[in-house]
Length: 141
Image (cartoon, rainbow, N blue to C red; front, side, top):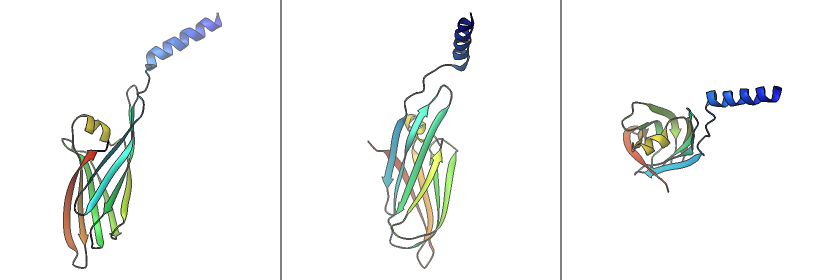
């Protein structure tokens, strides 16, 4: 009689917890470049019964000729007020800035047709000239 109770308990537990399979992980990568910057974001995305799990990393590489005095990088999606900022000082030519994002929603934004936008604001050179560039990332196949 005990085995039947255990099976019944397990069945009820599965019904109440959903016992739904998770979607397989999807890998994604987005990239684009401008006159002074190369930006790429890559990661993995999976959906559980009610949760979304996304882990991604970004690399922003400066291609300009001057030394950077300070930089602020804003990452956001179109039609969305959520954004993330990265602030760095003293980046020199050829260096990259690396950062990570957890559950930002890059994959879902792409699936919904939204743009993934990176804005760079920095000061460069001895004259401390303020510069701005904006990139819309594209999915890498």
